[in-house]
Length: 105
Length: 285
Ligand code: SF4
Ligand code: SF4
Image (cartoon, each protein chain N blue to C red):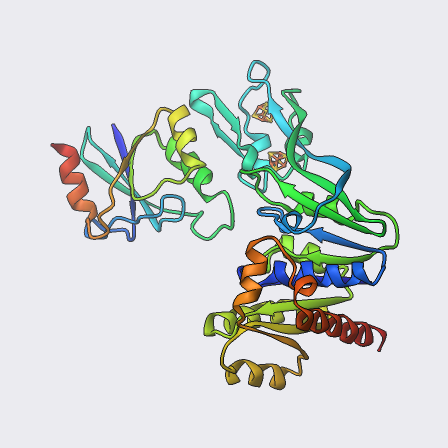
């Protein structure tokens, strides 16, 4: 299963980006084969609709779970209707590697 | 004559100024209309009672997708500049996100399968009240969750076809809704506060108005001790200081009760009359 983590950078040592729609990178972690891919977020700077546009990218990539800090009101019902699970982590210090670790347990 | 009253990011006393200027003009017997364009949180009606004259619904044509006809080709999504269509082809999922839709019609034109029809979405309303024989109050009120108040604001601005003098209570910020509210104004009153935050906010609004080639002047509200930084800035930029409204508890008290200080406190009546007089002269220059 693919899990997306919103990240401030494109390494495992980068920290979680609290903003879902405007995060810097999406880290896509595949729990089946432990592979990691980084997608730069093209919607980072757009003025409106960054949330739904980011949902689009992740859904197209077959993501079933998303870890982020804050999803926003527009995004929640969309993710619900797509049956994508949201995991909220409020710790800004959390590294991507730590989140991946906790997902594998 | 159209005068817009703007208050930067908000909370500076824009409503106080707009309602009191409207009041002194009304009292002079002028044909005047106050238009509350702060459509996200209109509140000018708290200060005046009147009989409702008009009610308009503001509608936007938004697409509705018939999933039994849709082949998930993605063309509509590609044509949408506002990310308002979400489509996941492999799960046969397509959805219009109404909050983001600008009603431009591009998606309907793009679909070759007849899967899209346009439906009316209620995005706001405009209500107009008669306050006195010659005075009207028009209120733009947008619905919660609408992408932008612009259409509602526009509808309010053009509701009254008669050549009334207009006082426009502009929305906060300097983006589209603000621009639409001040674009036809002959004069813009900028209401600010003597704080560093007020000053930086003021500068931003001034820059926007410069680009629009507008005449404008500043009212500093809640003046406690003189703020030289702000007056220096106004001098340097050659912006007229229309008035300094003192930090006066009576103003806050009258305001909190939905009253008008130009009606209840003589000194302020004079102050607002002077402002109107000054602007009149400026416009005729
Ligand atoms: S009407 Fe325009 S903004 Fe609305 S969904 Fe269609 S293309 Fe996008
Ligand atoms: S253009 Fe028409 S057929 Fe193609 S995805 Fe959009 S609604 Fe469906």
